[in-house]
Image 1 (cartoon, helix red, strand yellow):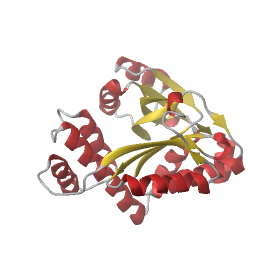
Image 2 (spheres, helix red, strand yellow):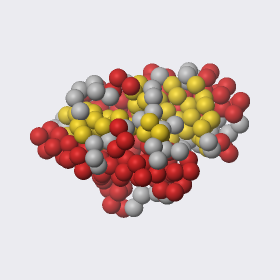
Image 3 (cartoon, rainbow, N blue to C red):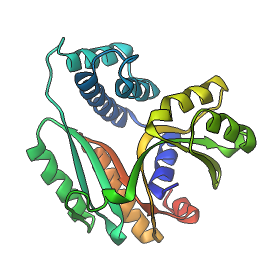
Image 4 (cartoon, rainbow, N blue to C red):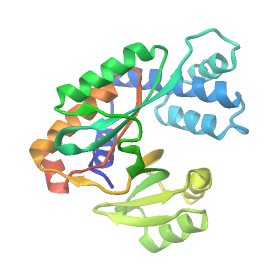
Length: 248
């Protein structure tokens, strides 16, 4: 698992304060709006919308807020028009970074993203400068203390997962996007608790960094995630466990 994924798990365990939660809900609402607009408001017929709703429920977003977001997407309620935007570049230590955004004003978002890259000592790149190294996959992580490896592997692989690998104190399950829903349901049916359940971009190769560079990378990622327009940040940073322990 990349250092960024480990860091997200750590932050999830710590929980979020009210300000962070409000920002997260706003981002998740945008995701629901765009999913409903592109594929319709029925989650049974729209996998992207169902995934967006699942993420919103994980964040304890109220049902009426979710319903309003769906209606904004289908046009039943008025609201801002959001469009997806993808930015690629390099962070400290030459780490590859992909920033996914949903914005109602690309002329605002692009300069903001560029500025965050530059303040971190990196730079915004051109299209496909780093995305060639990433594959879009379903990713689940399960605490090693919560599952037997053989049992977990049997459940996940039978549901369509590609692989189950132990990384330090967690099992990492990866699958194709098309198998995400089946794997998620299989884990739920067996009451296997996941730390992470998401569709993300997984790097083919990673860059290992020291504590100083790792801190700069994570500070840059935090700055991206604090931006209202940014939905997800992906990187190929590999921060060793002992370095992450220092950064906590």
